[in-house]
Image (tube, rainbow, N blue to C red; front, side, top):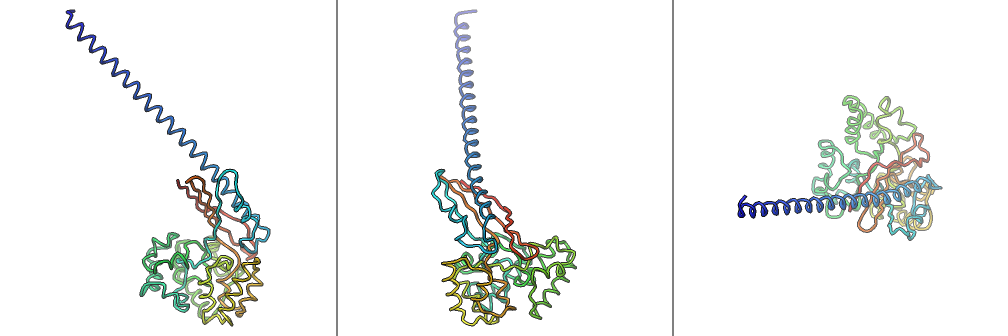
Length: 336
């Protein structure tokens, strides 16, 4: 081999070694990045697990309410949630269901309480039609937001709630029956029964539901039930007054009753019996199907240093209509 060739070979070998070294360095950098990413992922997973454990503890404490027939901010879980925590987490519990469910609300309620003013012209009719044509949604902003004035949907309405057979729009009940059972003919028959009850003024109680639902009972209950949907301890004062002012419900002094409820809920946990006495409406008034003292859906939120776990928790109604402290997590959301 001539000297020039030896120099060329030496240069090639050197370049080859450099390439190998660079490849090795790149691989080391890549592997290091992967390792660090895996460590970060493990750390995030651990932090998320810690937040979830705290949220699950909050759910357990909600279920241990010593007064399960009523919910208010004086229950022990709220004191626990407000404690200063050594782990730096912040716990929040909020009522999700004590507002009108936009999926179920009757058009007649919107019209007769003046709440139709919160909607665009023709909005009450469009809301009723859209639920049947497009289905129901917990994302009420996305589903119905264009029908409401600024702030009205967020203040007075929710997407979390059961369908009380005494207060839910008859066409929404028909569609919900069809969706839950797959039986269109059965849905039409059920709709006729609901129409007859509305025309006669009949109010169903929980004991009536097996006969009303028939063989579809396992598919319909508890999504459909006969429980008061709104907990007055957390109800917006404006909505409370609008409901009390419904002319067909014969509340003697709507403004005075609203003031009394607000005053009492600030100092005590109201029972269903006391609430009924304060309202003063006849026992057969449909208002009693709206106003109660139990929360059916909660949002439990735990956050720390920009990370958040949210659990949507449903309380399951009792088939007999009595206290039912059984809770079920139906949604879990994580954000960072």
